[in-house]
Amino acid sequence: MRAELRWLPVAEWLAAVRAGELDAALVRVVPAARGLESLPVWSDPLYAALPADHPAAARPALGLDELSGMPPRPAPWEHDARFHDLVLRALRAIPRKEAPAPCG
Image 1 (spheres, rainbow, N blue to C red):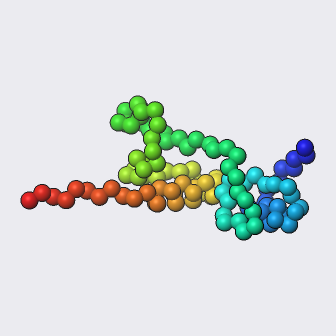
Image 2: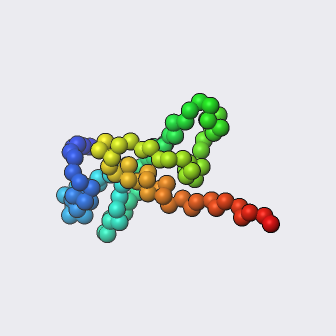
Image 3: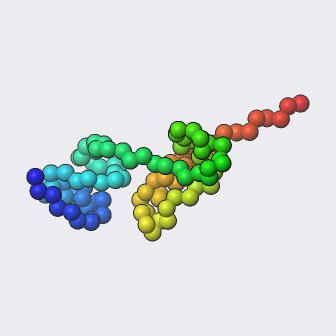
């Protein structure tokens, strides 16, 4: 197997696969790709760094919905724009829990 490492915009990788120039491309974020199948290869865990005394810090895991009330602090956009945007979109898509209506 021969592997070639290059950086290209995702659209160019997908176009090369679609044109038969490449057998496959490994990409992190796949937009809708007409004529291609996108299959997961692996998934990286996403960690939330919390202060040690935070109520959730002793738990083994958190759901993304449990972070919805906290201000998001992903890595700077300049470091990984696609991942930054992906995390913010996921957090914004979480339905907000409404406060209970006052009694009386």
